[in-house]
Length: 354
Ligand SMILES: *Cc1c(COP(=O)(O)O)cnc(C)c1O
Image (cartoon, rainbow, N blue to C red; front, side, top):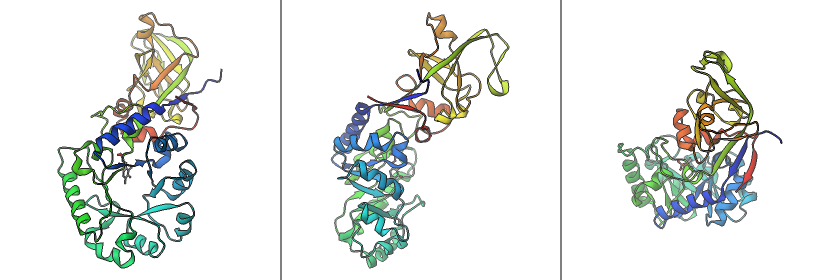
């Protein structure tokens, strides 16, 4: 047996999440944000299955991600968030990529090339996008009929206490009304889809919900986990009370402890800060992580499991993330968001499709 961590990727969960987002989108087209290798899950797995489920439009960050995506979804529309770099027209044309034009420089570069671009309007996030004051300059370079999409991005749609999302939504509505010709609009990420239909316009472009996470990990939204991460036990030891476990020895057993050492670590994306904080699951029984997380190893206290009559042996599979330990829970333990956890998944996994 080759003892390496394994990652199950579930088509059923992915498609169920997509269907749920389509249903929530109240008639708007449901596109998919699939940047960063589908948030670490793999575009080879995600893209063809979403396309088969009816998704016709994909968004990536970089043009080179779009080039790779093109081979998996030859028929789909692919938009590139990061705009049109200098001298990039030929690449976009060859691979049939559509740039999201974020600045007047982008717009000028696109002029005359029939790239069916999207125009990104800055509605207050001040990260990327063209100011609503500059709309007229856009049409000096492009005709309104050439634009395939008008979009903007929400900065805090998951925070219902903040008025920011409503302000952005109104600013976006205003920009669409100024548009000389009826053009589809797109504003909503996952958090925007979960808000009311006034955020949906003609197209939504969720990411994290497709992959099983929530925009705010402290406010789980019930998406199904697309990945399940398991690691095998390499060794089982009895550690006496007072003895240290792992690097630095900062964790000391406060009683006699059954400790299992698992073959996965921060090189696989199990963040180092999860040491002494997170739990894993053995046959559904939660077992705390004890001591520091190493590059390739994690030590867990399995005493409770053993006391309940469980027997742990070498090669026993332990769930790091999946049905018992949710992505959102792990993100809370790591003081981060589910997006970061997924995009840190390493490349040492045995990949299994279910
Ligand atoms: C990543 C991204 C999305 C998707 O956001 P989620 O929160 O993952 O749903 C949508 N739009 C833009 C511009 C993005 O960068």
